[in-house]
Image (cartoon, rainbow, N blue to C red; front, side, top):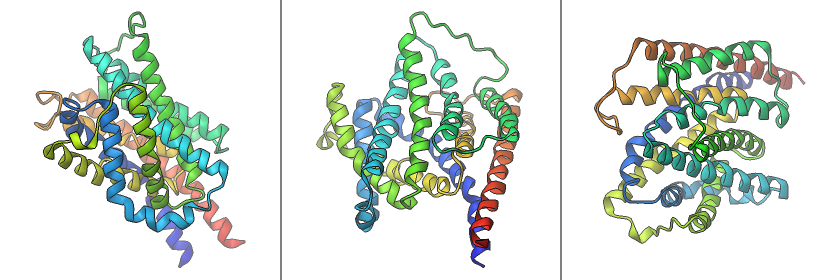
Length: 323
């Protein structure tokens, strides 16, 4: 019975990563109004402060286990928080602002799609995950599907002149989020998903506070209005701490190179939101046949890649149980 329980948890693990990716897509519905009155760094600080308050019972329950972390594990936890929770979010937010200011709505989105490639390289070099031919054959399909969801069959002309900072920020965010996946996977070897989530949000409070002042985007909790506080609470329960809890629950038993593609439910849910009256960027968009085809390609690719994860993880579980 113990073997079957482990196998079932492995089979559904990528689904939790997919759910988290879908939750992150809902973030724009909550964050767009906040960006009109609060600096990007202020939003990052407040969402982690409120998120930590919400999951603080998990943190206090985890203190005994957290104290067992060695110096290397503490370094990984701090680096993860700095790189992924704070750095990547700020860089991508700033890239979007700079890009939208010159009516370029495609460059940051397109360059963000480099993230799975970074994760594949890092997973091989750092986590020593094997990259099989089946996965390599599915990677182009997943990336093509992701591209078609955002841009259909239209070509995107990338011009570097005058947009160097946008390129640096967009690629930097993709790099940091990809590296963050690897650091998270490493930390989850020692901590449970709830312990890792609560520690990450705890560390993000002082780190985001310091960064907020270093880049001159100060914001104080007592300046938050009631309507804004309700948004931060909803973010904490859903797209913030709630999503990370779900994500880490899945990542615990999912290979990093697989998880990065399972996260691509993000663009799928984003485009489904965009075609409704909930579109935070204006009037509802029209879903083209190319967009729909892209969704189908990406979903099939994610399912195939997830099944590959199940097969490998099942073999590992059965091997350990037979020892």
